[in-house]
Image 1 (cartoon, rainbow, N blue to C red):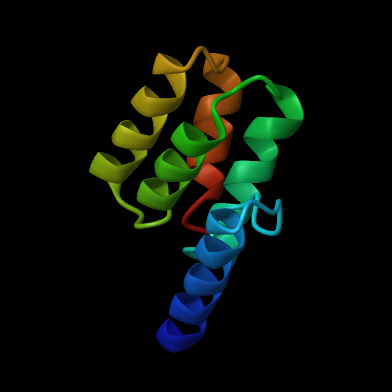
Image 2: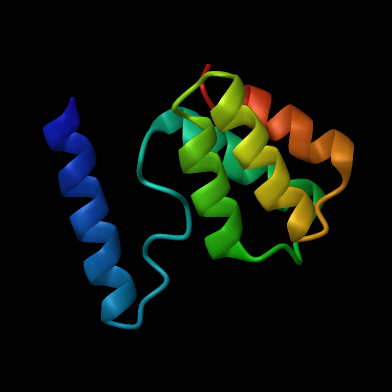
Length: 92
């Protein structure tokens, strides 16, 4: 499972490095993707890199990761309800 995640991350990074829009979602896990898309559906102007980082951290689970995810999203002006719901969704 970890190898598949790494391969996906490398392929996504390569696609972005080549200037294509191949990977627009976080590649850490499928749950982080759910968080990512939930944020961008509600707040399309959110910074994609910040959302990706926040959701990847949130996917780790636990109270500390939830708070870090939430504060990163709120710092990018994602509405509180959306940030909380997305960060709760990340580790599931």
